[in-house]
Image: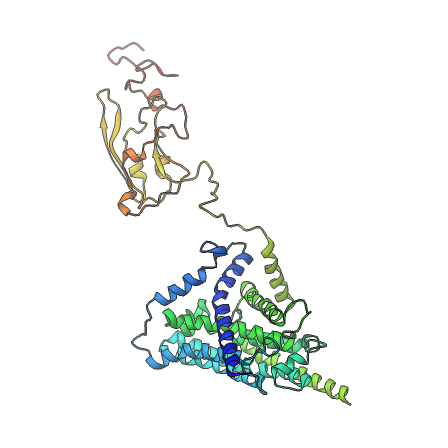
Length: 318
Length: 171
């Protein structure tokens, strides 16, 4: 591939995903409304799509205020980290044969590393805000993400064992005959739950917890800095959905009547829909329940899954 | 886990349920006839004002948004000289309607009263008075009152006894 092609792919991925993240403002509101027997925003533009523009403009024109008691530079840095780390994570997702920003041989590890870096934005944002609620949110976010990071990685090791590769293109290629959802259902469920916790979406929005922590780590943020957290969250949803599709649902694979990219995005949007459906239907667990659930139930389960997968893989080889 | 999945399914099928939203400016809400909205002053069947300026509505009003001044015609018929309702204060409780002895003040099913200036929400008598009898057609206070105010003479009303001659000793 030439340098120009690489640049086009990078720009294309950035363009598509930033637009998806912005478009999710509309998608989420409409879907949530539909599930609550309402109609949702449908006035501005066709089907209410211009709500995205209105919302973005509103965020741009809001006062971008840094509290005098805040740690100024860290306060500014925190929202950038979340967007940057998620966008970096998107670099290794193969959208179609040949359309991938960086075809790394340790792609999966890179994804895990980048999604772990996202915790810094919460911790630094909460710390720099110098506000008790923000700090509590940041603490919760840190412990939640560390807890769920452990078996997020472990739940994917089954996939790695079966495909014998960390490279995501190879992992997709290994699903030519059978998607890994069939052979790794437990891995999928645990990865998806960990992904929810990783993006701190409802029902796992413990660091934000509007009803107890007043938006938690980003209570002090306004204007486009808050917008960055907002976009980062939607980008995180897209990333986790894209990774779920890549790792368990055959990525771009699908019947030939649609091009691979279309298959990939169709599947991704189904998972984005499930993310929003979970927000619409499930209540938030208590903080200790969440952490206990992670360490006491999911971690043993994922280790068991790993053991069984390894045993079967060895048995099949011999 | 199963209950969570069931919850998610039950929420999901709401996608295909009928929506409760009424798209307001195009589609209107159906308001029942006794709905408590904008306040009006109604008129007699003969077109006279029903209000007799008794101040009971102003006294009943819990937010003191009604102001009026009573006066009299030469025939002795009372009417309000001015009648003012401040709708930026009004809470549409309907106590004024309950207090009114002549069915003059009534609340009607209309809520579209938005204004750009707050001062425009203060309605004067000419804004309040409507050319209709409202919820009580055919009712005229002076038909049942003992007073002769040009509607009927004393003692001529339905079921009304002749005025007693107070200077006579005969029953």
